[in-house]
Image 1 (cartoon, rainbow, N blue to C red):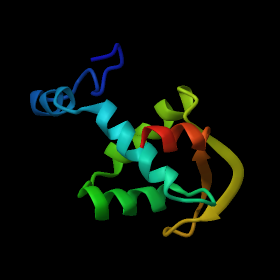
Image 2 (cartoon, helix red, strand yellow; image 1 turned 135 degrees about the vertical axis):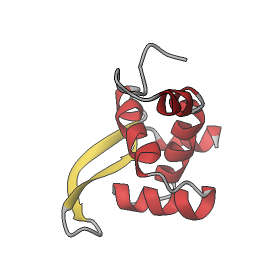
Image 3 (cartoon, one colour; image 1 turned 30 degrees about the horizontal axis):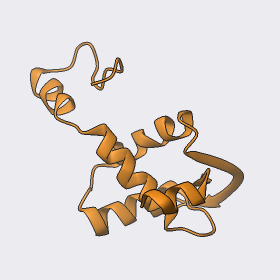
Image 4 (cartoon, rainbow, N blue to C red; image 1 turned 90 degrees about the horizontal axis):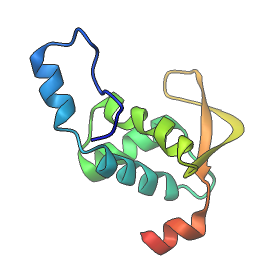
Length: 106
């Protein structure tokens, strides 16, 4: 596991065990593949729905926590565009930074 801690310092033992059991690399891959399915970019709501339907992942934070690391690694980019989400609030549109690389890997 990386140097990043996936739980609070005051977290109960059960939360620590759950965090230690997460395969964040696999989740990043699933989220990246989901983002690549949207030709015109997507918002978080799109990805959460996709991951629930195709991978059975219902946890909001399991999905949304991956965006930051994917952006930091240069794998996704925010376009500057915003779209209205299910809540009525604006969400940033994201795209795969290098679609040809994703196609080769996926």
